[in-house]
Image (tube, rainbow, N blue to C red; front, top):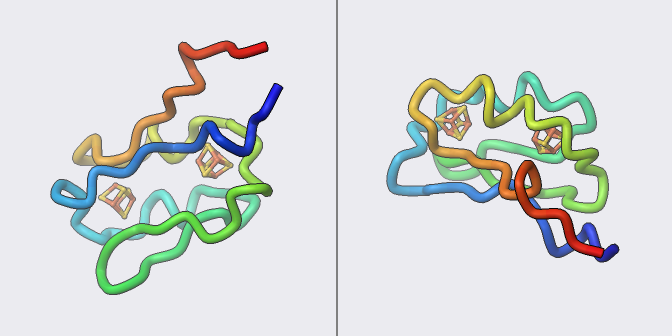
Length: 70
Ligand code: SF4
Ligand code: SF4
């Protein structure tokens, strides 16, 4: 399984930079950069999907919820 290629997908047009996903990400994989969320530590993502669950505008999605490679 190559998990490093499967990351939360961010819709930068929709993201309003609220930071809720950054706050909820317990591994620090996300930051706000120039008023938009960015993935800074992809290798640390443990696929919890909390970022997707907390986003008020559905700007971040976790494709690994449905994609099982292997
Ligand atoms: S899925 Fe979980 S660990 Fe990965 S970026 Fe989102 S909140 Fe962080
Ligand atoms: S919770 Fe959603 S709107 Fe807020 S910073 Fe994260 S992706 Fe952007």
